[in-house]
Image 1 (cartoon, rainbow, N blue to C red):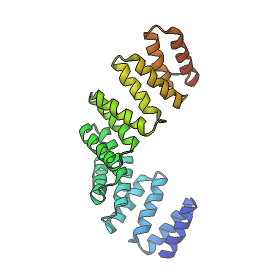
Image 2 (image 1 turned 30 degrees about the vertical axis):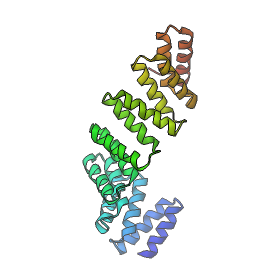
Image 3 (image 1 turned 180 degrees about the vertical axis):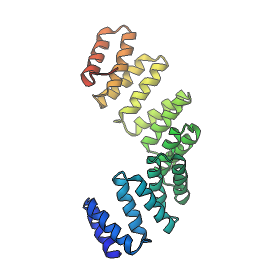
Image 4 (image 1 turned 45 degrees about the horizontal axis):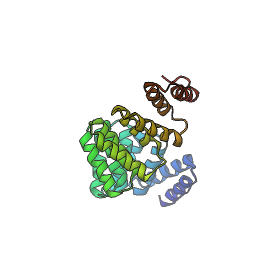
Length: 239
């Protein structure tokens, strides 16, 4: 089994996935309880979007080594892909229980709970991710989006600004700040943020469009036309 396993690893490293799969399977024929083979073949199937096959192998790996944190984490990812969201939540929670500072597990779990409309729980997981890694820009952005959803506008603004402070070249928080200020009637601040998003991402059609809407509202028709022309150039079918 070991010989086939090492052959599989070599092929896997070289991205020769067909050969790797074949060797992993030969190794499992000789030793179905070979932990590494179950886990890495599961990873290969996950890589090839064969989530159901990956699930079975990750479950087998965990059965062999119940405290293997990455087994639970990767199982959660494939469960999510299979639409088994509650099971995915349980697997992420198991990964966190084994390794309480598993940043990616907290972040993925926060995103999944957001998808399941469990907003407060999602916020708590994103907060934990930020606690583990205070410069975790995606954490601040994700939590900002959730604060918008529950109407905590100032907290949302603070979160987006913190994301920008960590990564000034991140266009999305600028766009979201633009939306926030637009809703609050602070039109100049909104345009400034949309323009900053556009500066970072010159193909940001939504930012051009929103800046156009505000310019039109402020009777700055020439500027509005200029923004709208950009939208049409980037995305001719923009609605």
